[in-house]
Image (cartoon, rainbow over all chains, first blue to last red):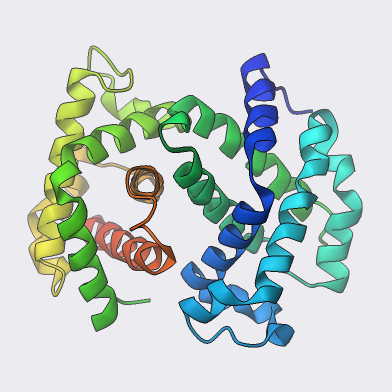
Length: 147
Length: 143
């Protein structure tokens, strides 16, 4: 069981409440595809991923970025049992999508960078700590059902 | 994953834009590292004050950024340019090289905060590769 302080709970709710999902989701996924180009292996049918401009302008990337970010909502609403909340999604990513779980960590890092850029000085060291801890739990839960 | 000519060009151009704030970047990155990755505090037990933005943190952040500046200038031969620093880290400081990745991540977070428009995905990938290369060069003399 993950222990959350009051500060961490409040921070996670606040960060996601203020977040513009339509902006952050696409930005995080497209950044991941540019910074870690091998992640493109999962998006062979997304069309033009030829360069950074193409990736950032690709509507399928944008749509999928929003999907992924909304997927985090479940964890935000169920912070006390993220592992159970994501059990099914973990099986999906392992058995159907066959995503190397290390990619969850890479996307989480890009999401951190994008949220930092949007929040600016409000993304203090303590907020960063809470946000990264939350994402680490999500990443671990998504990798849990792999065998 | 070595630095291409395009990466080097991007790093030099980006560094030129941000170098003016080097001390702030170093101070904030180090402050964040000590808060978010508390195990890194073990290297600084000799400091009176490890709180974000404290005097020793600011001073050491500046020192680290000086090293990054040297690395940018030595980008065509990081091993040679960072030889003395590698020996320092290997034989005297003995910082576990895993921590280079941790500090690099925090530098990237600070760059995103201070330069949200300039730190676009292309600048990000070049800087990420560059800081990884710096970490490798610093690790060279370890064993």
